[in-house]
Image 1: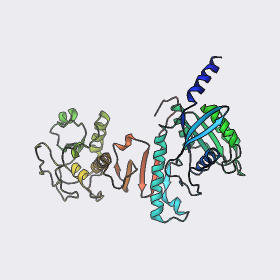
Image 2: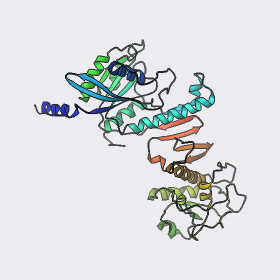
Image 3: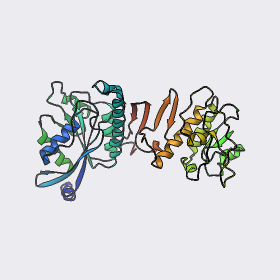
Image 4: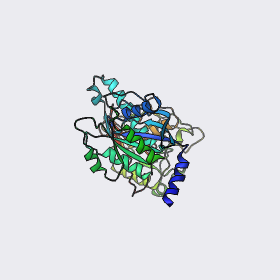
Length: 206
Length: 185
């Protein structure tokens, strides 16, 4: 009973709040695709450009006042699409995509600056979606560090197991690696399970 | 001899090193009294603001500088010890200060004191960033200038993740670690 009362007041307090929702994860896990999908679904406009080249998002991209209405409540969010987190940025990786050396070096610098910005934003986000690629092993330094930081700061988060439309997707592995965290399986590219993600967002943020 | 990283004044006794410089700093670096060719630009007299770039000293800083000084193999010779500073007779120009004020690239020739320049260039980067003068807007806290020679942004290490620039376009990032059981980072 007490829990219900507390939840009621919590929902009441959060009704009008503009939640800063950060999209975190490694590079090329589909953060921008997911952010675009949400933004298009909810306000009809994308957030940023998507590319197969790593570190396409090298600055924090935002879409403000994205409203999610569910269950009679309204959640207003600022979507913050963060640059992909990496522990090493090497210009030679970009040269494999046809960039010249100078251009690749400049991109590496911008990408590193983006990582620094994304990490600093951990201080300011109200909630986070940690996006992981279901076709890859999610047990890595970046995901562990991200989740540790979010937990230590009491920032509510959801793990989004993305790319479930791809043949190598293994969401069971994601759940095994993170058994105690809320996980939503989606395909940002096809839109599969996005409604489920919105419901989970409402449950965890409202 | 040991010189104050902040004002360049040489310490006259061990007690002075332990108690701190008259300028308030407790950070000293070791410099050998050696005569030879100079690699660094002659010192120009810095104003008070320029001399106030050094990070706040701490006990750990002091011991680190000492240790670094002790392991230095060979140090850069200085020619500019006699330069003077307006209204401050106690300010003794040093290789450290020269390096801080100089835009010369680091010299990795044999006989150069990497430890000393390592510290001084780090302080220089900090100063430039603090005043918003950086043209390049470097993002790294530690930069390898040559093999085995590093510039360190002493102040920048307090902000954000540790970023090491190994070479142009190659960066390593150490993500801040936090665990709920260990508390906030």
